[in-house]
Amino acid sequence: MNPRLPPLNALRAFEAAARHLSFRQAADELSVTHSAISHQVRALEQALDVQLFERRPRNVTLTPAGEVFSPIIKDAFDRIGRGVQLVKSIDEPNVLTVQVYVTMALRWLIPRFPRFRRENPDIPIRLNTSYLDWAFDRGNVDVGIVIADHHEAGVHYHHLFDSQVFPVCGPSLLDEHGRLERPEDLLRYPLLHIHPAPDDWSRWFEMAGVRARVPPPGATYDSFLLALEAAMGGQGIALTSIMFAREDLKAGRLIKPFDISIPQHGQWYLACLEGMDSDLRVVRFRQWLVKELADDPEVVS
Image (cartoon, rainbow, N blue to C red; front, side):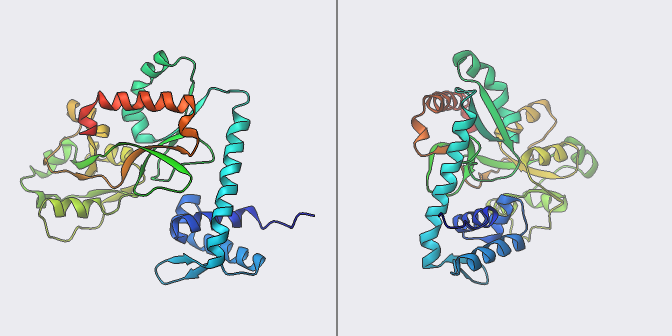
């Protein structure tokens, strides 16, 4: 008889916490509370009668037992994910499912898709849009256009480009409060923050030579799209990239008050499971994507 398996939720919580070495980041990824992850991991340890993590004030580390168990569980979830994709592909064998952040989808990718369809009529695309700065969704997509500052085991990464971010605001904000003369003038305005990149404003002010303490966020959003909408509405000043703001800058819906940019947190990659990088659909999508980026030097410079 097969041994009774621990609850799936407990295994999922352990896998995410082991990958991030953080209960909080695992909670963010799985959209549950920090205490829920802690409870699930504790239940798993009790079921196995072994300690999997060393709890410390600011982080967690894997015990020797956790080090052994982590790659086993990760491989199991990877296999389940590949099985899900295989089953899905039975009725639609050529569909390529692409993970992409909603802002990039709306502001850059979707307007270019007619060219991909003309050049690759045999590869239908299904988009999975995400608002959060999460890792490659290995269980539900074929490829992902993701921002990453580290590489996960079992995932193949093809570097696409690095990006810069800079402040933008709506004209109505300046009409109401007057012109911005110096970078430190921004401290008087509501600063709009992006949840996945909480330190960007501090880094921008440091680059601009402003040593003052950054005020609390005027508001925090889970995507550049929402922050840009708020900025265009005169609600504050947002940091964004040219990829996301170009058309609004050209149309005058946004203004770039200072020509000071900082590197965006993380780098842009096309990610897929190891072994999938040679799949013909993935190869053709990657070649098309690289060509489109090469034809848009303002984005990748």
